[in-house]
Length: 125
Image (cartoon, rainbow, N blue to C red; front, side, top):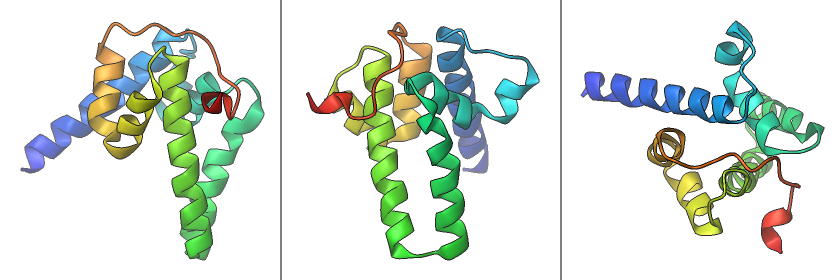
C-alpha cells in the first residue's frame, strides 16, 4: 500500500511539472521546489498566486475553522480556474477539486493545451 501511495505521489508531482511545462514556465530547480506556487502563477493572470501560501500557512498556524473554510473555497476556485486555463470545463474543475491527484495526472499526461491565465472569477460567466 505504501508503494502505491509513493507511486501516486510521484505521478501527481510529475503531472504538475508537466502542466507547468505546457505553460512554458519551467525555470530550473526552482520549478521543482516551488511547483504549487508556480502552478498558481500559471493559472491566474495577476499576482493572486501569492494568496495560496498565505491561506495554507494561516490555516496551519491559527487552525481556525474560518481559515480552513477559506482555504477550501480557494482550492475550489483554483481547481476550476486550472481546468479553464487548460481548456477544460467547470465540471472537470470540480472533479479536479474533489479528486486532485487523479485528475491532475489526467490533465498533465493528457492532450490538453495551455490557453493562458484566467481571471479570478472568470468561471462564473
